[in-house]
Image 1 (cartoon, rainbow, N blue to C red):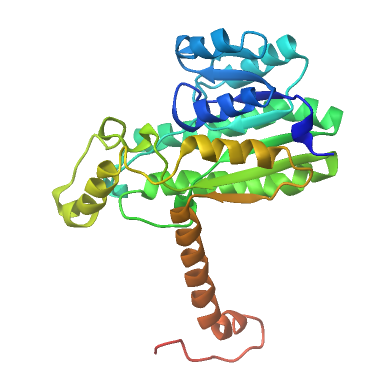
Image 2: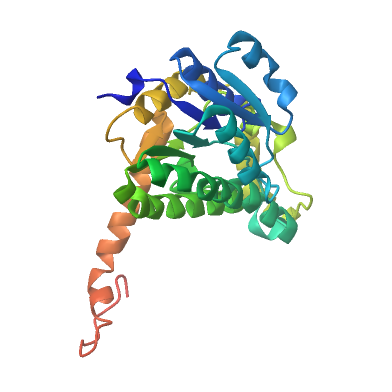
Length: 290
């Protein structure tokens, strides 16, 4: 049976705007109950007013250690259990790695990796007990598509993907599914200039990072992707009995990820003989291009 046919309880993070808001609304329109969270729950008042019998608004800062388990506990007490967790909350950090301070890097990992991991650990006991549940992780095409100036952001999304795809194997025996979303550019506020940048700017990197910074900030409000349509896809996928592990969202995501995978495959195959030559007893082989 397609799970979209029966109402479920969703816990969605980062619902004040963007993908989080769109996913919450899409799930509510399908008749699901949604525990929508944001750092400022007052931004969610309209959801509760429009769907008073389905929507619950809770305060959650995913980067605040200890708060995710408390929110999961409250959401579970008020709904009876969480069927779908959507780890959507996250942000971008733009700047060359040398420009990113240790504090900025750690803060970014808190939001994009450690907070989601804490939420996953908090929901898993009840999902294991029921032997069912879906965990949706918001990654990015940036986990594969590399662009100067996004080293810190790419690192967090690559870490989230590594965590998630391994998690999928760990929890599959308990009937729990994991879906990793890889969106490209959608019309959210993620690329607004006010949300980008580092405290330090090093002039030496301007020719490398500057054009990309201008490009991504110039995309704000012009992205090709429709977050509402993407949210409908997310709800559809979460309702499948056997959802895919990875779901690219957007033409740019599909094309950039495909290009990156082809480049990785070409690089690895070029060095196949060298890789095999590291075994005991193997002889030396010429390096490609030597």
